[in-house]
Length: 65
Image (cartoon, rainbow, N blue to C red; front, side):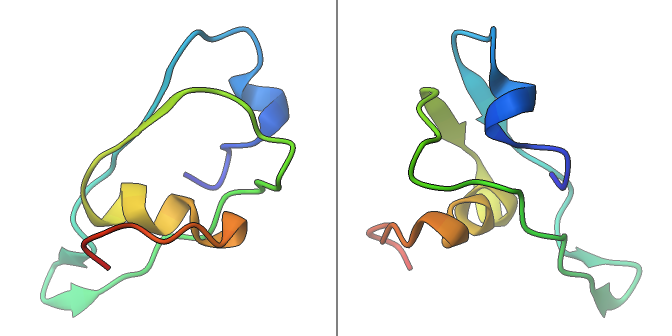
């Protein structure tokens, strides 16, 4: 997820943000936040906790948070 940015998403019609559970190996490992800002304009599917965390820099509230 740390490589997700407007630049890396360019050229894709849709971006899917997914990743392993943060509860692996008996510890809670939080993935780094992507480099997104208000200029990010790709349609994006958010999956699980990694997907929800991906939009934190954009300050978007999801219903389940």
